[in-house]
Image (cartoon, rainbow, N blue to C red):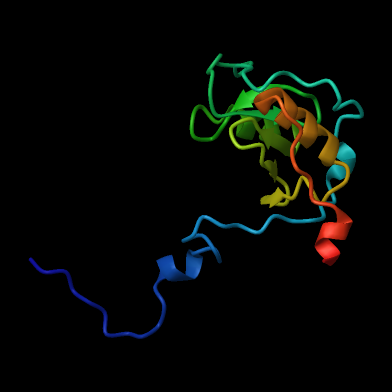
Length: 144
């Protein structure tokens, strides 16, 4: 049986729900977040990127809570970081997979290079994961 094709020119629900840039995998990270006061006062000492989830001991796809420094697995494994946010309201986390930073309250990625409060923990995580400091964006580079 052939699938019926709609003659309507209005966008489908799927098209309306697409995120700008999602086809390319590009998502624009926020350069401001009202939840930064929830960050731990000491993010210079963090668990290593090879740390396992503290709840299920899963070795991959783990996130670092930037409030309490607990390491928990992603929503693609057992959702322990998501559950942690729901239970504790600790909303900002760093992915040990790709070093991205996510705010659960904003429901958005945060630009760890542009948000000065996130730069140190991003740099430390990069150093621990790759053995070198990351090339950071500077204000001078943005102006040129």
